[in-house]
Image (tube, rainbow, N blue to C red; front, top):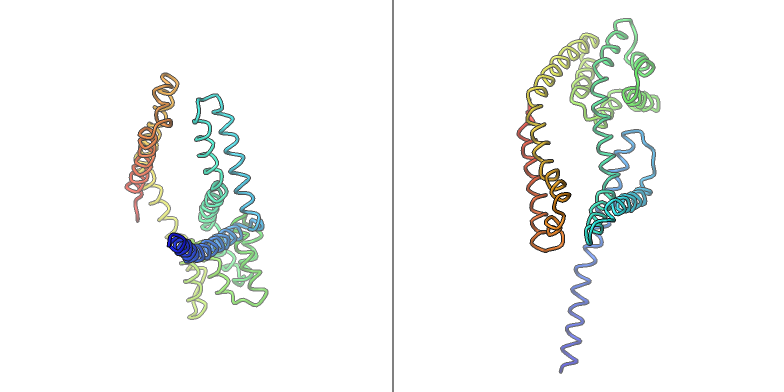
Length: 287
């Protein structure tokens, strides 16, 4: 009887493991593939041609390097501080490449938005000089700098292989996700279909964009104090903890050597991050 119960329990565990493991394995594999596709698309948008298959190796190497560096920096501390610090550093290093990609992508979009106004002015001048839209785009590619020249060079490349010019411009707007470019492309598409002066459309869009950027500058200056306060208040616990550790290391050692201290440390970090993002959200004015 005991053997029968043991056998049934074993079968139940195997069936439960199969029912849970297989769907979880498939979901994890699908999630990894989606993440790879997303990172590959982001790299292509930034004209960084790195095989996405190398990303896991890069992430593991980054995790090992950052973890090792932090471990060596805090090696003189009492255990288990070096191991905890190395573990945190490894986690940061593992997600570091993706965070770097997101940062570079944001900077590229910001730089593109800053160059777009001058690019629209150049297109308007080219159209007034008698150039066609394609010729004006070619002049823009020759006279401007990356990332603006790269994006419109890709537009021209798509057009030369048979893609409609309006569709190529729409693809450019999808890659850059720039609201001003989307507005300009919609205006150009409507004007090309219905007839009109594209150069005048560009001049109006440039005037509107400049006025909006002036408003953005005023908003940024008015909310700068709130963002600075959020940063200062968020860093205060860590700066205070650093000096207290130097003054009384035995007292601060309780934070990572005891369970209540470790829970308190986690609560401090979570609440501090929540407060920081909350204040930044309040200071983020939508217009």
